[in-house]
Length: 316
Length: 316
Image (tube, rainbow over all chains, first blue to last red; front, side, top):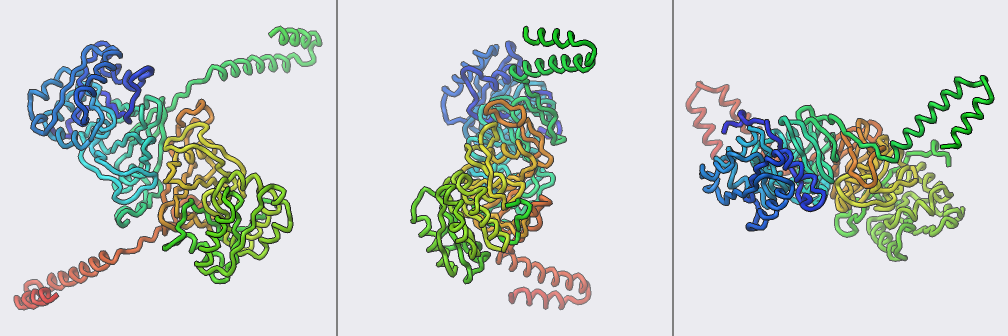
């Protein structure tokens, strides 16, 4: 498939792993909604997983509980499988394609460059919700973190990049970001390739991208974006596993409700719900201020006015 | 002591904990050198530690092994101790004051605002090496991280700020930065107080500050600086322990050899030693290019020229 022809009509989900499957389920609920809700026909792709049918059963149960019309599994388990046009054709009617966690190198190894990958691109282009969790999140961008080590400080050779699906361009997605302390490896990748936008997704959290570049955050944690536009690094010179110089990286930590423009690399908005207690306080203050304004206007007019105000105040 | 009168003639050491005490010892060696080398008279302040004399014995052994003229311990173990002018006077001749690790709230509780703290400021003002490791690093800035929880994602209420010594202004120093995954708590503090420069120091690494604002990095890890100048945050509104929005923080990860201007908040330089193998390669390439230039100049002149060049090349 010609990369330039990739459509962006769909909704992209990069989930940081360990998304809630009971109770709140905000991340998976958002996926079902984006896939069409009650009309959602979801295909689960468990190729990254070393688990058998049980991983499929879990997602079938939760997607059905969340109201999806149908949930089926399509599992290419080799590059030969993914070359099979009949297997790929099973994505033709999907309104959602969900890749499970596991080992993302299995996904890249089996799928990238095959008719199965083309079918995922086609689903995305026609408006499906496409993406996945953990390994299934890493695979969505054009550059994929294959593996690496944890730690806050970026070091030479702490991670490895390979080729991803390319549903998201100019980016690299890391997952379990907070829980596995992955600042260092994401910074090291951006230090080596400052044009790449680094996207780190916490567990039970999703980076949801619409229109190709409008990122919105759903879930319990945050999405961390590393922008290397103005970055200075010694990544071309650092030796072995030495800590890397990474000066001037811009960081955006985006909790649920944040919107971020991946092309302009800026925060679009963050909606903060006003807590109930504060709403009441603001209203009380406003009515107080109105009373005070009346008092000032009435100042010196009549002592009975104050007496009346005071009595009114005491009644509240 | 009037804060405006604090001198900055000395060398400030903020060490991230677990500095090497055997073999390389680059961090403690730098401390002894800054304290005067063979003329160094170092006072160890172990007040933060819950250990007894053994913590002093370790530093006495290592500072003496590194050539210091004298190493003694002065240990205020209460606020009353630190109010004692005689105890404070024992710092009068020190060319180095080294605060050990432990609980930094003990340091702030016992020392800040006492004659003992004044004596540390006086030592710094007259040119001593002053600072410490772990808890002894956190205490040096004007704002001190008292305690907090780990994790990459900044959250409301994940850490607590209290008052530090103020040898470094407009900053907060965190330690064990990489090893204890402290990005989140440093980002959360800068989100709440964007004027503060966040400084995270890895283990076996020192942020060494001269002239009040010229930071240099020594040791095995890196110093991470978080600059909130252009930061957008919802820290004023986020509820309970929710992840914080922190958009537009500028990050500098500085390995050994980096210099950073804390006032201008910019990288000054990073010196990268050329590896021996590369030096040889560059020299070989240069001589090759010179040969190629000669070849180009000689082109068409004489076939024997090439024959001569080839023979010369084979001899190498």
